[in-house]
Amino acid sequence: NGSVDGTSQWLEDISKKDSRLKVVHTDHILGDAAAKNIGLKQSRGRTVVLIDTSIEITGDVYPQLTQFLSKSSVGMMGPFGLRSNDMRHFQEVSVAGDVDAIQGYFVAFQRTNLKYVGLMPEVFRFYRNLDIYYSFKFKNLGLRIHAIPNLPIRRHVHRIWSEMQED
Image (cartoon, rainbow, N blue to C red):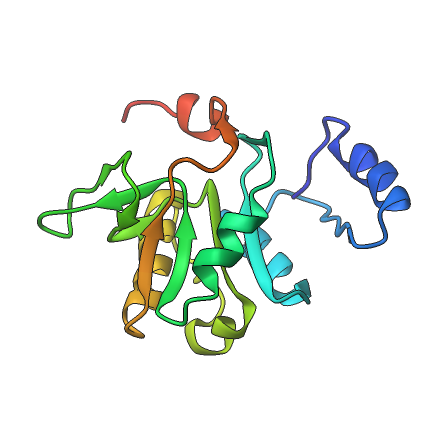
C-alpha cells in the first residue's frame, strides 16, 4: 500500500522462501478498502484472513479459524468483536461469542462468501466505519459474526488511530 519503510523488500525476501505468498505493490498509498480489495481479488484459498500491520501472530491461529468457519452459520470472525445497544455506538467486547461486528485488525471469512457480500465499498474515510459496514454485509445474509478474543495474536499500537488528531 505504497509503503516506503522497507516493508516491500522484506515481503519480497519472504515470498522467495514461500511460494504461497504473493506480494502486490502499489505505487502510492490507497485507502483502506481499496488496498484490501486488491487482496480480496487476488485471494485463492478457501479462507480469507485480513491482518492489519498492528497485529503480531504469536501462535497457530488456523485451528480455531477453521473450527468456527467450518460452521455454515458463521460468516465472519476475529478476536476484536463489537457490540451495540443502538447500532450507532459500538463497544469492544472481550468475551467469545456472537457480536454485531468485527474490527478489521484481524478478520477471517470463507472466500466463497465474497460472491454474496462483494468487495469492500471504497467510500469510507474512517476505517472503523468500513469494518462495521462490511460486518453487516455478512449479517444481512443471515450469517453470524463471531468473536474469539483468545486467538494467539498481539495487537500493537495502531498508528493510524493513535496519530489521528482528536477532531
